[in-house]
Length: 348
Image: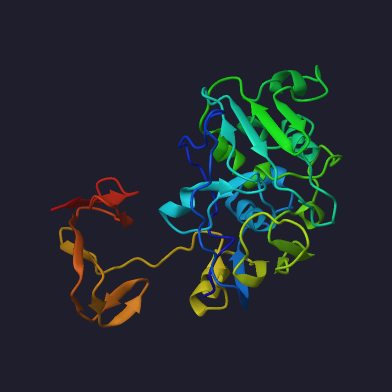
């Protein structure tokens, strides 16, 4: 399976306070090393309808994953697995925002030389227009509720003001002013639904918008109701690109008929990644009233079926937890108890 450099973060939601103050400029966290480039194809499948490729409507797991490959918000989540992937780093911004003491004002300097996929320069005016498009009731974007705390949002939505008073564009700088303190504003800015699009984009759903307004490391080669084909942008473009280089030269996202077909594609190796939950077979040998140990590391002998080794032995591992089954169990949590199944197991 190929490294998942661009589809690693399917959804975000970090509420940590990030950024600096006007009297203390913010610097980005240490860069996360990008996975090595490969000439291979990342084969992705889903049983859900393929998204329309308009970032203002990227509110599902599938649409967010694909938008993450095609567009870059002002700030974004680091391309890394686990806890490092929750760190917010600059996207189209030169650095993390400078944040006022009360976490109401966020000042962002754009990278120089940014361009959309069609070659049009990306400016701070495009950023302001993007948020006005999100907040215009005519657009009917699910992202409107995420940014209605911007100063002037209500007046703009009501048609009382031609522009958002709380979004100011000045040269290469964009400033957001909120109605109230909210350190989590950065987490919302990092969502693909906030990816900038060109000024003048209609205030409605625009199918295929990211084919011309993408700002990420991939471009749309083909798009239909059954297939979206993405190609990595060459390393040398002559202008700035957001994000980190993708690991796969090509990403092919195919819509399959149903969950059964999706599961078969994953199990057979015909697909590398599913954008949907893949149901796994249960372990009938887990018995109510019986006790089990969960270990990490070490080695195991036997045949692996759905992550469980049958007819074998394990050795040299470190015990993670032990539990007694008292009912249906889905997963075992970090404290040794169940995650997602009330009363499913108890730690001994």
